[in-house]
Length: 182
Ligand code: FES
Ligand code: FES
Image (tube, rainbow, N blue to C red; front, top):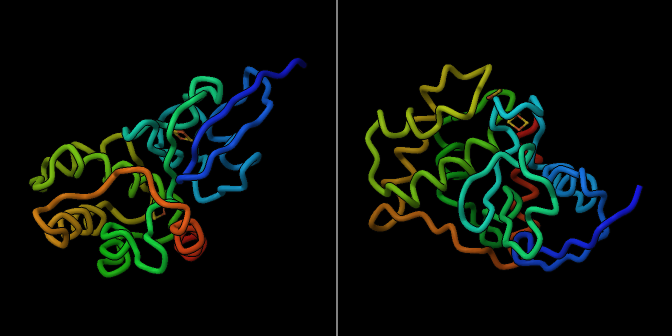
């Protein structure tokens, strides 16, 4: 099958690839770039495990063609930490036991970061509503919601940074993504 060129920036690093036009963004991230912190739970837009930021907004990367991300900034769970320093959401999920098997966690954190960027001081209902597109089969959601609320309190003024990361965050972010796997 013929390929098309795609160039995009992922977690602050520029990439130029040749991909099949049908390739999904989630598979570009996982298979071409090795960023396996972004999970595939359903492939049908239901679970949210594949959530990443595209141009600063949370998207389900199983519903985006890689060619649609041409020229875009993408952020994945591997880009959330700042070097050795965890992102406040990662810290809060860790502290509040906001995960069990961890499969949904990268997508939850990426969706929550987008939520807090738009609404820095959410209510519990805001968080539950904001994470409706992300499914968790393990936790019952209580500690996930608590973690997001605590992350909002943890940050000065309740603001979560969703700006493109520096490449320094990649290593530590990958470590966290690895740790939260079963
Ligand atoms: Fe994308 Fe489930 S894998 S929504
Ligand atoms: Fe959410 Fe297992 S699916 S922690």
